[in-house]
Length: 73
Figure 1 (cartoon, helix red, strand yellow):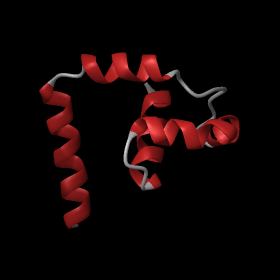
Figure 2 (cartoon, one colour):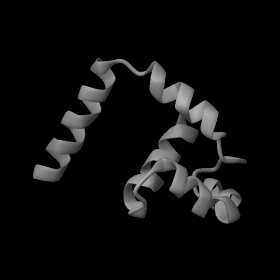
Figure 3 (cartoon, rainbow, N blue to C red):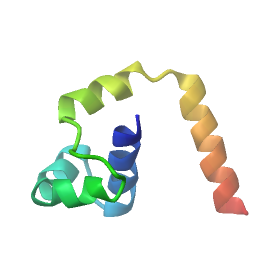
Figure 4 (spheres, rainbow, N blue to C red):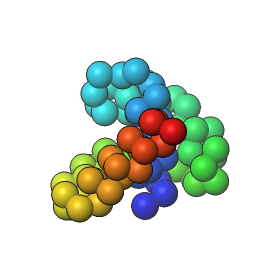
């Protein structure tokens, strides 16, 4: 799961409009980027897509609440 979170954090701060654009621009730097999170390689786009599709509303709402609370504090 940390692989997916690393990608999503990177995407969130990247300013790219879509995950597809983010992946395309990240590709040449994928290994060093993932090494920041002590991971070997970038997860495939299809694996990330399956992960996101499997999320239910409860964990998404919990993360949204945590991020909002952090932002406001």
